Length: 214
Figure 1: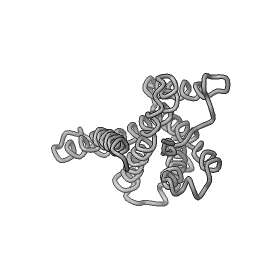
Figure 2: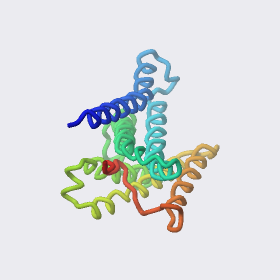
Figure 3: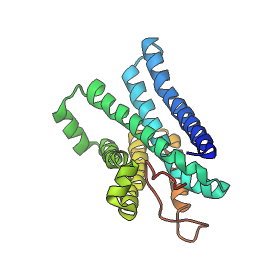
């Protein structure tokens, strides 16, 4: 590896590490708040809400990478997509674990009834289920195994996962829908940016996106 490549590798590593640290801050804030008793009268509800919000925010951030890098002329932004996607999966796993463990106490029958009867639970489960194969196949090894086209087709599931995440939030809220509506608008804008005819638009998608070719 030449000196120039070493410098670029070091710079990329530092940038990725900084991004991971920043994205872990909401999690650390929840842990700190929990042990300090600062999560309000219903800590479980607070943890569930915050982990769900960060899952949706990071899913949308993942979808924003492609339009942003084209708009800004910064192809290097693509290298952060995989990290954003995996962190979305991390918060999604925390969100689901909170529901299964702290909210339902592993009552599988009750959860089954929830999934069938409460549409926001159904949408949330669909969103998380779609994120699983995206996280599992986020490595270069899986890109090689599946082949580029099949890998890209599979990772278009991120569009459905994000849509289900927005629906999950929208159906959860019973009165003030401004916040879920905002996320819905952001999702719609990000989808419009991918329509054919847009400058440089392609069908590229993917939660933990394929590492950018160097």
